[in-house]
Image (cartoon, rainbow, N blue to C red; front, side, top):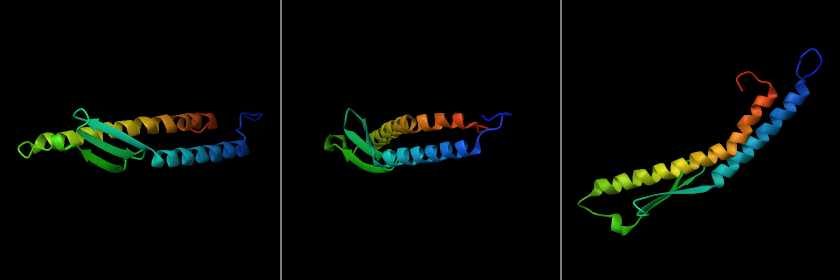
Length: 110
């Protein structure tokens, strides 16, 4: 803060630009990351990007029972949920430090 309690606008702009670069870097890392979720002891595996895009689903043939499609559907949903949770954790890990830095700008609401 400058004398009189006024923030230095040039310094705030530099901090904002730095944070913008950090956010862009974190988003790029998330887009490249691949996270895997499993269900049924590995019978179903889902892979998603760090941004949540579904990349692949692998289903072990042992999980395929024409008489019990509902269980397979549940396993697919569970694997996707597990992978999405891993993606969320990675997002929190990558973006948390950046979001926490916003408080240093003295901006209202951050």
